[in-house]
Amino acid sequence: MCGIVGVFYRDAACDPARLMAMRDVISHRGPDDAGDFIDGPLGLGHRRLSIIDLSPAGHQPMFTADGRYAIVYNGEIYNYAELKQELAAHGAQFRSSSDTEVILALHARLGDAAVARLNGIFAYALWDKVEKRLLLARDRAGIKPLYYSATLRGVVFGSEIKTLFQSDLVTPRLNEKRVAEYLLFRQVAGSENLFADVHVVPPGHTMEIVGGVASPPREYWSIRTSPAPFQGSYQEAVDELDRVLNRSVARQLMSDVPLGTFCSGGIDSSLTTAIAARHAGRPINTFSVGFHEAAYDESEYARMAAQACGTNHHELRIDERDFASLLPKLVWHHDLPLNFANSVHIYAISELARKHVTVVLTGEGADELFGGYPRYYIPRLLQTINRVPALLRTPALAMLARSGDHRLRKLADFTRRPVHDAMIYNTTGTDPSLVRQVARANGAMPLEYREERLADAQARGLDVVTSLATLDFQTYLVSILNRQDKMSMATSIESRVPFLDNEMIDFARSLPLHYKQTLKHRKRVLKDVALRYLPGPIIHRRKSGFGVPLQPWFAGNGPVGKLLDEALRSPAIASALDARLLTDLLSQHRSGAADHSELLWGVLNLSLWREAYRV
Image (cartoon, rainbow, N blue to C red; front, side, top):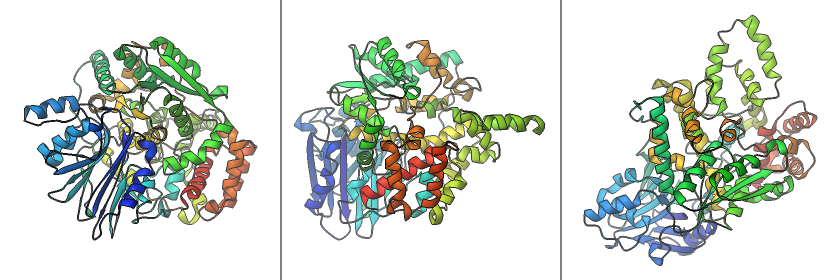
């Protein structure tokens, strides 16, 4: 796991000093080694975190024996041993045991089609010295990030956005048309973000750059391409999922350095831990983070899972003061305002893990693949509720609206809107109209990427839950993976996601909906696998989602509350948002009249981000 950067000018030679500055601003991604390569207008830089083949033979940039191809690469290829054997049978010779060299050899044999053969997490840049052509590539799910900016003077790219600003091609500017979308969803979907003129190479895409000019990204894989439907019985599906998950975890245990898991006590991370412990053949290290606030603390379930799996368990707790002191630093590491408050805790647990291991396995992706989010029920329930006579429906909805459960309040709110809104706004608990008011002149909210993805799913005849899961895979999950990458790599930890192995993605998507979710069961087939490995209380407890006590922190006058007060008084907020309205909303929040935690979290992060990057 590493960090990559590069620049390709149209009519100028690459400046070595600027290339080195780009490379070294992300030294946290690769503290073990550094390298660069310049070929006229083209420059490639690399920071190495040594995981596979710790010898100098794994140094990057890496070149083919004939010198034609050069690569800088961030990631791990889990099927590289099989590919290496196949390539050797066709005459390829290897000088190292690294997966990087396998990518080079595969491209030399297959050209651009090579990327579709890779099962792993990756972002890489491959230079063809003969054709003077650069190819950028990113893994199917977008587990490893890759940003770029295409300008009149050339193209610059890197694993983190901050690398781009070390070049002379792009400077930080606010993308005003995306402010409202960020405040509502805590994320900008698609190729854009809050930085103007900065884009991402989309997951499952490659992009060609010739003469310092970038062509539009080309898709080599899509979540929209459906695998053949699974034909077996439900019990056969449980058995096959067990086998597929075991193969996925076993593949991702490859490492020449110590390895462990993040084990929160939820089903997904606990099941990953249980299977990893069986394949490791020795006690592995597990890590969890908890809260001093009992209502948010899941430590007992993490300890229960660790005990059941026989691991060496490590845990820590984060209090409000720790949280507030880390937040500004982590906004810088994230490149953008933090999507999730628990990013702080993932950073802290990564910092703890780095004292013991260099690689961790995590549980991301299972909810999107197996229908795990309670909010997926909302469109299904609306279809039922709307058939109930108004005389009975009205008092029932009024009771839901007063519920102490935010999920039930959200359901009541959506009954006043079209089912379409319940799908587009499924990931947010904030009123879109309120966000538009707060964002003032920036209140326009183009959601074309989300609308297009949802329309495509519905046009293909997918049911509402599968449509939502497909939309989430292309939007919400991308932000989750970005959080995991940035927070773990800030501490030089590599994180892997067995649920997003190629085989696992295809198998999960082949299952009929009722194997994954019914109105009584979420993640049905996955839970039945988990019951083979874990204690029942972990499987059957209510999903909590790793919540953070923002509501009481924002309502109080502690360190987080004070950070928020400073943000509302800052020029960064006054120039972009309606500060007077935000002051009123904070008063409502502190009086207990309303819970505006989600919106206030976005505002706080927007302020810290603008200050960190002088946007």
